[in-house]
Amino acid sequence: DIQLTQSPSSLSASVGDRVTITCRASQDISKYLNWYQQKPGKAPKLLIYDASNLDTGVPSRFTGSGSGTHFTFTISSLQPEDIATYFCQQYNNLLFTFGPGTKVDIK
Amino acid sequence: EVQLVESGAGLVQPGGSLRLSCAVSGFPVTENYMSWVRQAPEKGLEWVSLIFSAGGTYYADSVKGRFTISRDKSKNTLFLLMNSLRVEDTAVYYCARVGMAAFDLRRAYFDFWGQGALVTVSS
Image 1 (tube, each protein chain N blue to C red):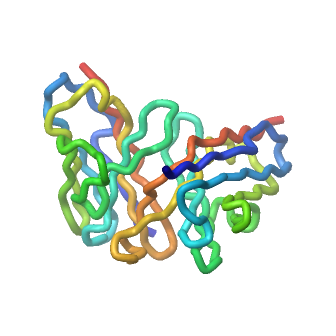
Image 2: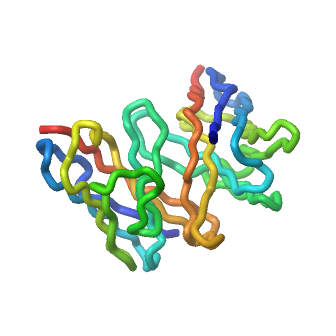
C-alpha cells in the first residue's frame, strides 16, 4: 500500500504570506495526487486534482505541483478564509489514501 | 445543483448495527462511482468503501466483513450498513462521489461530499 506523509503538520502564518505544504508518497504515483481543504465542522472540499489542476471555482492563489513521490501545495497570499486543514490524497490498486493533514492558521 | 445528504447518524453500543443513507440529487448514483470516507474525532480522513457504477464493491481492511455498501436506483440513494460496530468505528461518515479525469481510475478524487453523519459507538 502507498503511504502519504505531509509536512509540516501545522503552521502559523500572517495574512498575505506565501504558504507551502509538502506531500510525499512512498512509491511513484506519477501526477495522480489531489489536495483538499477542510474547514472546522465541514466536509472536505476538492481544491486540486492531478497534482496541479484547479477544481472549478477554486481561487488562483492555490497552486499545486510535483510528480513521482514529491508534491507541493502553495497558497500564494494567505487569506483569513484559508484557515483550515489541508489533506493530500491518492488512489492506487483499489485503495484510497489520505495524508495526515496540515493545519493552517493565522499568526 | 448537486447535493448529498446523509442520514442515520446515532449512538450505538459495541457489537450493534447502524445503517447510513446518502440521498443524492444532481446526478444518478448508479452511473457514478461512490464512496464512504470517515473521520474519527480530531483525526484525519480514512477511506471506508467504494462501489463502482457496475456494482462491484470494495472495502478498507478495517471494515471488511462488517460493513456493506449498496445503492437504490429508484431513490437515488447510497447506503452503508455497519454491523459488529466497535468503539474505534466512532467517526463522522461522509458519502462522496468519485470523480476522475479522462475516466482513468488512477486519477480518482472525491469531487462532491455530503455534510457528514456522526456515528458514536459506546456503551
